Figure 1 (cartoon, rainbow, N blue to C red):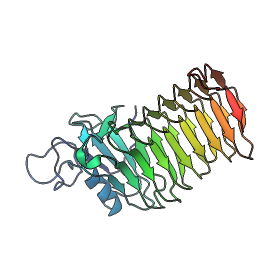
Figure 2 (tube, rainbow, N blue to C red):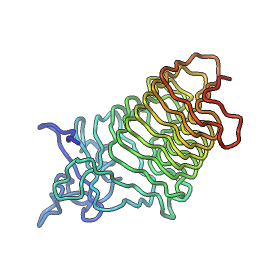
Figure 3 (cartoon, rainbow, N blue to C red):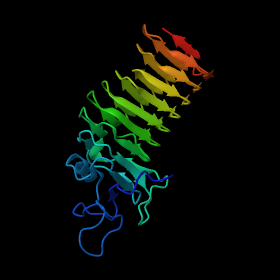
Figure 4 (tube, helix red, strand yellow):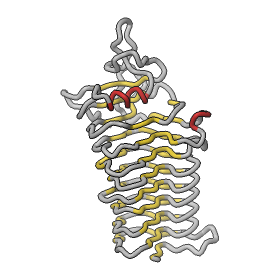
Length: 288
């Protein structure tokens, strides 16, 4: 994968195995002397976005030198920073090459907690890329947006897995977009997206969740996604005008796609197969 950066972009690094939060974060390798080197913790990187050290157009690279077992929720508190937060190779160069970095919630402090938490209404235009949030059947939720107003937030090639409740939850009107993301093996819904407009799911996979693959109380475009093997509906939407184009709804316990409420939705070129196979009276698509 090509790097996001241009010549005028400042790049900062996190190396959980070798870094130090006393360094300046501006080099992927540990220095022989001085403080020019990577930070150690992801939260320290996030704090440097909040305090302005990492500014608009800059990039934070989290290097795959270890699995990042977090001991507290990662809090996102910055305002309107157009930054890229991405996984990167473990090599000394810290390149963006498609490497996925795992953030793991299997610690005592994360029992029943949220792994990544945003309580601000201005998390606008940030991009998260190549991150695997593994709740490890311990943390409650991989990611939680608790207030409205964070718009244009994007997740690219990310995974949200094994939470004891929702994989990813948005409580109120915030505009999130997901590209090539996976929501899997969560105890309840893979994605719960409430009260939003202008959202997008593109080429995402929602599979093997204990509830619905996705639960959308929002206006989203859902394009070329797969909803497979979920214990509820593949996708369930309420009182919205979602547009579903070229998706696959297969082998979900209940319905492939369930639509409820008074607003209209659009369905074009979708495949509905083998739904209701768990014994429920499921349908390919049902409108309540």
